[in-house]
Length: 468
Image 1 (cartoon, rainbow, N blue to C red):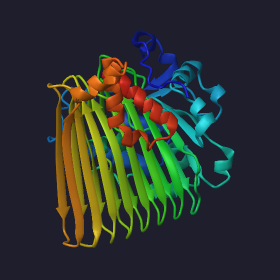
Image 2 (cartoon, rainbow, N blue to C red; image 1 turned 180 degrees about the vertical axis):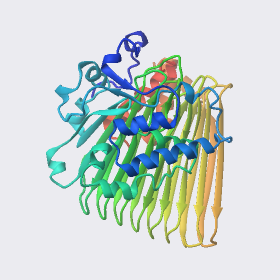
Image 3 (tube, rainbow, N blue to C red; image 1 turned 180 degrees about the horizontal axis):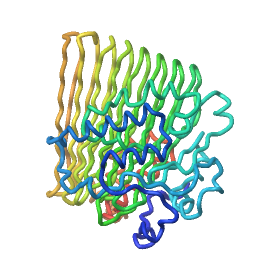
């Protein structure tokens, strides 16, 4: 697989709306009902979707920015372009993708990864998907993997209407409302009952325009007894203006079904990453999250799982790396509703050069969740004396018949370990990178090989301070 952690030359990739105006369609900066209607008209929304957008905008204007997370004072929606569309149609033929866009994705390893290890790929550039394809043998199983807009105008419209922004509602928080108003792009996946997709599907999101926002919506429904691994990759070049990512992920896991959702985020360090992800799991189902968060100036990222059905399970494995100028506020929330539900949350964070890493966990156990079990573990590694790491756990247990635990620990790289590796002929920089990679091993071993390699490369680049 091609190296996807390369940081492209800024001048070569600098996006100039005036120069490239003939190749792109965009709305004005800011956020008004007229802009929302313009986006809706451009996408040919059904009436119910246009109404949802405008109602979401009303809610957005009513709500305040959350006060408990990192400051996002540097984000001014009056200077964010909410919709930037390359003037090209989505295609299932890679050769039909415009050369400049194709070149960007090829440097990121698309579509080589598709040929080697994926059942299907979606590639989004700024606000729209430019490429979407699924292998014939997977489609023949009845698996639907397409862009959300196409699916919304076809036989799956009612299914989408039933599920769209039902787990994540516009009233959840201000940026969920923003998403509901201006969302664009993303994927729709439906896996029929009993179908097991043997190799992963992947969507890759590239935000290439300075001063723009990306608001993709991913909707996945894994029906009874089905099995799917979905991979999400994200990246952006660095600019000297703020960019915004406020996507949404809604996951529906059926009875005795299983879904693994893996994410490697390599945003640039001018990015405000305010993403929302949520899953609901029926009886006997399993939801697995694997998350690697690198880059971005500020992150608010707290995937949530609702264990609705009896004997349902949730596993979360994550890592964050906060370097100079980064404040990454991440975590996980689990709501136990069914009997004998089980959740395991294991996270690791790394901080260097003054980076701030905060882990927030919330475990909610309802009265109905008899014999529920939950274990939350957080380990932090600080690489210097100027960085910071905080752990903020919350537990709300409404039944005495539950087993809930939390542990947290903070450590530093020992001089003895560095000395030992250097005595074996390894230079100090590589020795530190090896120790950090080992610290992150619980995440990398959960990823397919090529993505584990990518994550370790990202760690090495972060250690050298060369990302973003």
